[in-house]
Length: 260
Image 1 (cartoon, rainbow, N blue to C red):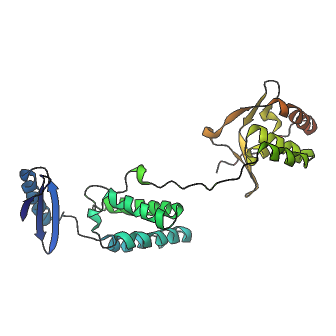
Image 2: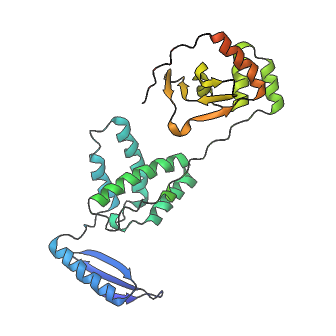
Image 3: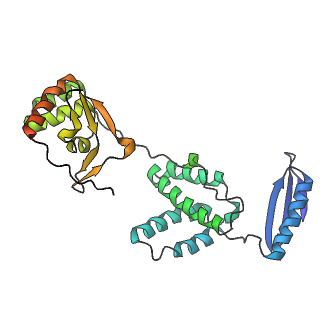
């Protein structure tokens, strides 16, 4: 064992046990000597974390997904390739949050933010499993939400007022009414399609968004609690809504809502 004083004033302790090299830095020489005693004791009792590399552990970890659904298995197998390419030779116990941040930033710069986000999710599961197996004494290095990349939304073209008027002039009937409501309320198409006469309070000038229609699954689903909202009806929309409610007649029974 050797203890060296670094230029920063800290002490670096290095120890070789059964051909495996271990090192750590401490504020005082006494802490470094205590670490040496503890490390030797762990080696004798067999509790010293094995020097398993990220590449070795990733191979074993993927075996646990053999019976998983194919899309889950392929998802992790694809992402693990990027993790192993960057951190494969590293001892899994020595990977730090800075290494994860560097991996994520590299993928954002060289690939896409979407890929970086997927790799981050796989890395989180991989290192959480390693920490549970006792291979990461300091815990999983993927433990801070600030590392998670945010997927950048693509820009969407927005109609100017004059363009919106030109579009409305070319519409008629229910299409024009729907366009007016969407422009006036700022609600999504699925939210407008999920409206019933029960949701429109013309007397108070309010629209309650409680459910949404999914064209993909052809289903009506309850809107999540944190997305329930009440919108004010602009004066320009009163006439279309009054006519739509009047033409709808007696409100039909509310459709059964799918929770999942």
